[in-house]
Image 1: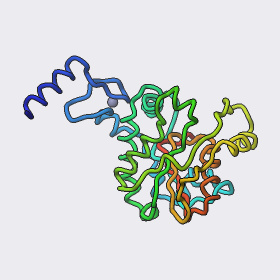
Image 2: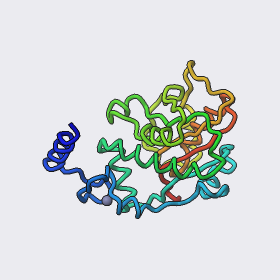
Image 3: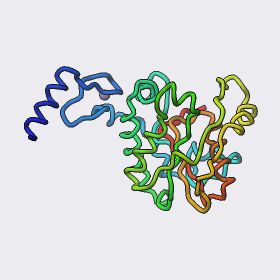
Length: 233
Ligand SMILES: [Zn+2]
């Protein structure tokens, strides 16, 4: 059976060769979704090791966070952008799981992430979810949850209104808009928990700020955030 399975896999790979989502080159046997070279080359921030890192600082005075991190630096025209694009628009959800798992191995090395109770991905609006078919942040959260052996909750937090492109608006107005956008369902049992909120890329932080405030209003014990990538403003 194993020989047959291996033979079938090899045949499928021959007909539909699996390519790296970072560089587009053929994957070798044993590599999945991202090649070893791209994984080795990832621009790691190591923010999880430092309390006062740039992500944490971005939320000072905006959101009371216990811990905050992002695993990678996000810059335009880099492999990180290519990977995020694959995850977000090309159905390569496993890229999110794989990178989420990798982030999990990093978080495990710092005690501040030890007492997290629940992982919640930033939700997508229903309309967008139908259009894209999936929420990319949910797959990052899935990888994290697997590696940290924690439950993931995708039902408590929801987004009730799609936001139009807000990139040109001032931060204040963006924040005001986001306030109305997130809510918590009746089934949620969040009080007293340390929640890790997960997003794909942090830019202005407005989305996480809005989500975080909604969660804090539920009487949670601690709020931490982890994103796959950080785009310096
Ligand atoms: Zn590659």
